[in-house]
Image (cartoon, rainbow, N blue to C red; front, side, top):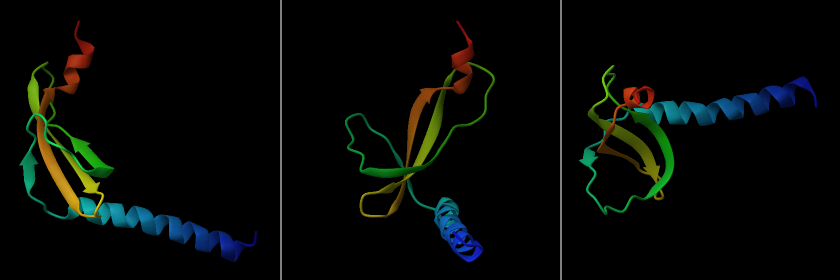
Length: 87
């Protein structure tokens, strides 16, 4: 494979990552998750939670692309990441 083809393939691969970065900068309405709510997730973009050093329940967010190609975000309650290190 010559250098031009490799460069073209690398450029195309980077274009996909650029689209994901742009999708994470768009503001969308955060919908609170309710038990039994159906999620239409095609691809998860990010999962975030507030930093804490204590084991407690926190509100986390999941940003994703649904099967229609639209960006969506939900918030949900979970144990903090710090709980993994406690007995």
